[in-house]
Length: 183
Image 1 (tube, rainbow, N blue to C red):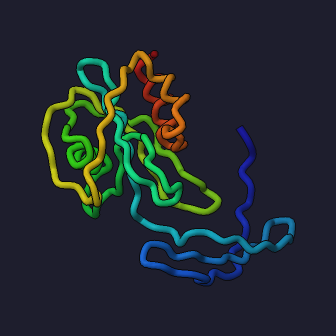
Image 2: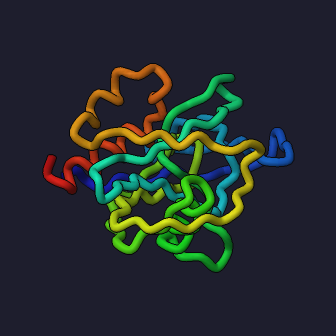
């Protein structure tokens, strides 16, 4: 594909801001051509996440509508969450399904591991296709009950026309699931 480039030298890393959830670092870098630049990024985290595209035996996608503070509105997307310490991505995905939509899954297909914005975040999210669902609920950590939305799989591309289905990770997961299912 392409030649391996020499990574820039990290000259310094300092914390420039911190909250309960985020730590922002400033990195001074020197590139192989001698140019120096300052980059800001979220401090790398070992916690990764999962997103699940659940499909019922009746051919329905199961989505959730939940409040997103950054956009200040309710967003429609696939169930997702952080991987807890000691969990595999598949275990975290099954737990999140049970917490968010009241189902577990017997069949799992890993679709892809993605990065949200690799210039700023190091965390990854593993996208899964979940099939052969069975009812089982766990208590989640959401502040209000999530609305579960059933969507016909044969109308999946129509989701792209809905203003509240805008999260890039959900859109990527949808396309990867459709490709996996050969639809």
